[in-house]
Each structure stands twice: as C-alpha cells, then as structure tokens.
Figure 1: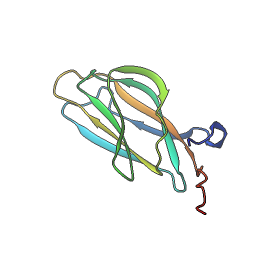
Figure 2 (figure 1 turned 60 degrees about the horizontal axis):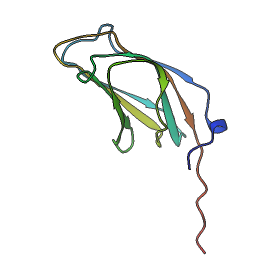
Figure 3 (figure 1 turned 45 degrees about the vertical axis):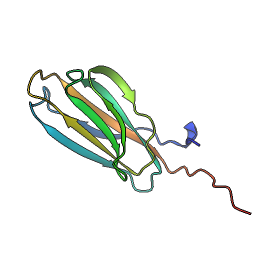
Figure 4 (figure 1 turned 30 degrees about the horizontal axis):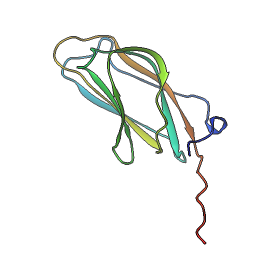
Amino acid sequence: PSPPEGSWSGIVPKVIESAHPYVADTKTSWTISQPGATYMKIKFGKVDTEGGYDIITVKNGKTGEVIDSFSGSMDSFVTDEIQADSVVVEFESDSTVHRWGFNIEGYAWTSFAPLVPSSL
C-alpha cells in the first residue's frame, strides 16, 4: 500500500537547477538522499525544455529503475512516490534548441512501512 497523506514530511527545501538557459550536449545528474526514508517525492518548480529532445529522468537511487521521464513545459508539480531513500535526477540536452531548463524546489519523504502479514 501507498503511504497515507498524513505520513509525509512537508517539502524539505533542496534547490537544484539546470543552467538558464541550459548548455548544448549536456548530461548531468544530481542525487537527493534522505536517511531513514522509505518513500520520496520530488517537487519541481518549473520545467521548460525542448519537448521530446531535452529529457529529465527521475530514477530510484537504490535500484536505478526509471520512475519517470519528461520534457517540454510544465508548471509546478510533484512526482509520484518513489520507494527509496535516494532519488537520482538526470538531465540530457541535445545540440539544438536550448530553453530555460528546470528547477527543483525540494522533496517530501516518509518512513512509512506497510505492515507485512505474518505467516502462520
């Protein structure tokens, strides 16, 4: 089961930004970690990249599993929950159009652990 809404921390400030405008042919990554977290969510303040070409990828920091990948223009939003105590955000741009980029305002986390039924 998913963590209940009341179990999440508020948004913990953690400012991460691309260059504005971002640089051509760039691949950069950032790791956001929270010791003791079982789930995390990332809050983006703004995304403005070349749709379909300059890509932001959000990965589980433990497993490397891709949680989400997006590009284009979006206002403030929060990612789906990620079952991990760290998240990796990658940004890759191509050689053509260079837009504003993106910023992350922070993250939320919880140490919620679903009850595991005991075996008889």
